Image (cartoon, rainbow, N blue to C red):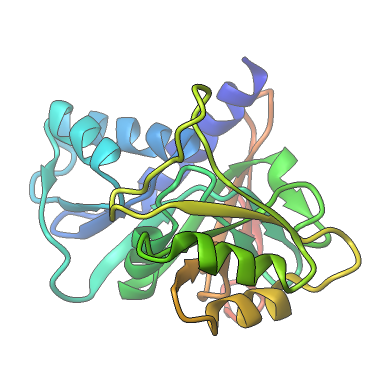
Length: 238
């Protein structure tokens, strides 16, 4: 429950960045869902009248529509994308994302956004990526077993993500996801590059997209705002 408080606080803080007339990228996952709820509440209160949204998964699209938000296709650059993360490495602001299964669409939306904002609870902050969570990799369904064996050939522990009943998890794009356990001995960025170079690999969950800022909630509902070091507006609280 305390992590829900943290996620809600981060989502509520980030929604203040949304202005009337913006197109907003909606991330996937439990923390991003808090932002969707907060955004819908602002629209319901008529604080925002002309906001359109691009969803990174069918699940979040359904949630947003049910709450009265307008979903559009991604056709051009968008104003801001707000998403969660499975790990955030400081001070580089690099990410692992994709445990929610939407890593490809999340990366497309992040790269299409003028501003990319991350919301997390404090447990997601790490000094080094890939020690505690796997690196998700989406691969083409055709020849998936061969691609999987090639990933294993890099010397990493990996397995297809599966449902409790044993079926492979399939992304909204119709492809399986392989979770790769990098560990402390290897560099996630380098390993991601090797994996991405393989034929049959669509994308990995390593994000080096420029992050503008990270809102970090704690279990008491407080929020820290960490601004990327390349920006000139400093680091402040909210």
